[in-house]
Length: 232
Image (tube, rainbow, N blue to C red):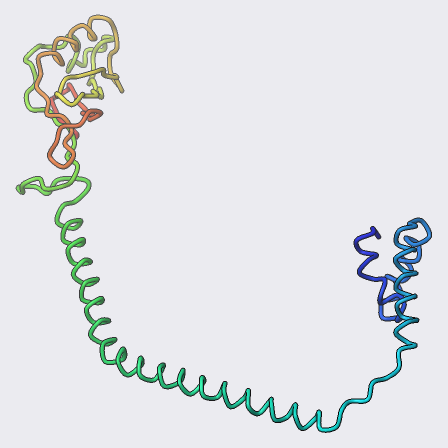
């Protein structure tokens, strides 16, 4: 127990109003703390003086005067309470007729907002374009518009050579529709094929990715060179 805790327990220590465990801890603290012992002596001295003070006889009619003052105070507060209750009732009578139209207006606004958002999100899908329909989605993927007519050696042949077979690559475009870089996902991957791919992609035309109708960088196009198929 420290001195701060001891100061709170000293009055109860004299009156026997603290728990036995706290009394034991306080006794141990008092054995080692002179300041708290002196404070305890002051409490004892004050208790001795208070015990020697003679009792004061209340004046005649004190109880009656207290009851009269209490009733007068209660009557004043009752008037304030009545005024408050009347003000609350008047405000409720004014606000209650307006509450139903206001609530209906809020619910109507929320319903209209939900319908507008639903029409925007459902009518403009975020992925994929509906066939035979104008693209109205918020983000339109990049796509190939025209492929340059340069043959690729070894593509489309199946005679067992190392460079034969289908070629699948992924091209990344900038906002101008130019190929920034590409990555061969499957198929032949040697210097001759890469040189020819550089020419094909350089002279091919791509439409960049569109966001809200504006060109955006980072669009990707998948190209397959067994026969040309575009996967946006």
